[in-house]
Length: 101
Image (cartoon, rainbow, N blue to C red; front, side, top):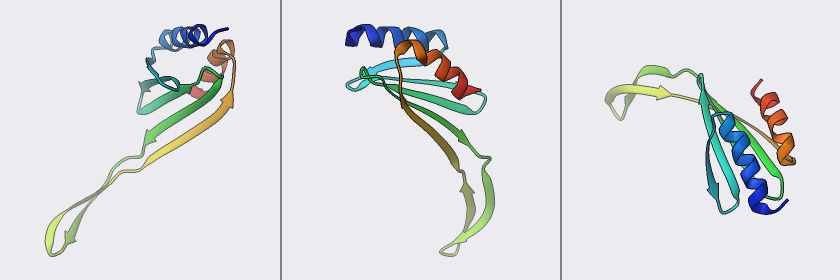
């Protein structure tokens, strides 16, 4: 399958799963937000795939003093998980469903 055909197939799969998809010079990137999670997909025409899952931990807020100025210290952490592999377009749906489960 040619590069444009591969990317078209991948784009169709991602859009069917409600991902926002855009083309980059390296292939396709996609993102979907759901219940406090951000799912990201990076797919190259060679079949290289990166799946990413990002979630934010609850904010920690406390009163603080900085250089004798009263204020608030706010801390927010993100947890980022990534999975790297190579796959054919027809394998993408199975991988995404497993990643999001």
